[in-house]
Image 1 (spheres, one colour):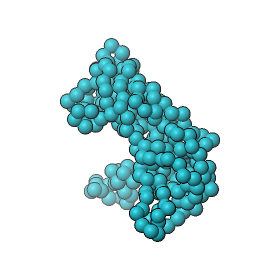
Image 2 (cartoon, helix red, strand yellow):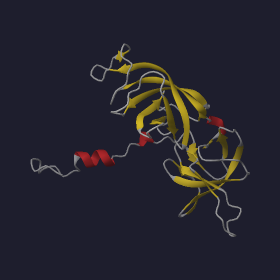
Image 3 (spheres, one colour):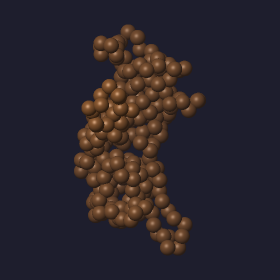
Image 4 (tube, one colour):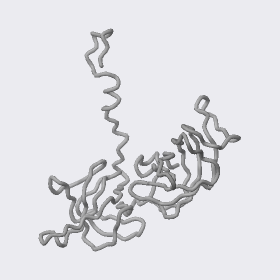
Length: 227
């Protein structure tokens, strides 16, 4: 609420401004990325040949006729149409939710990603990341095993190395205490059971981030930013 001590101020409250301020730099319109969340195949006579790939665009711009590449398979096609609940679009961009149809029959499933052939990311199984440890009941110590959720894909992951923690008061690296407790921040290395179609967090906040989930309790224990 507005303060009675500042009757001269007619603008929005600080909290409202922080929650609604537009930050254009958050949207990447260069590297085209669309993680596939769902494959739409209606069971009806009218749409018997419809096969749409639904998801939220994480970066770039997609238009009908554009060449696209499916990762990690590497198959290529062109966009036939871009559908929304309000009809077809001439272009779509982050962070819009759409369903894309292609001109070729390609095996695509949840967890795959549509990209442009000229700037496709390299699949990676070895990941360096900065993480923030969320759990107050479990600690990260050594080679822990977790479920890694990245965009619409899940894979098993093992921590191969804990590099350092960050002292949040001085921002110095701490290398003699590598056990992560609640709210600790630091750098680790991971190895995943399946390739990730990932960018650095600096390049794309969606395809460059992930969460770690405890296999036994399903607790989200950490959030990570890929370096």
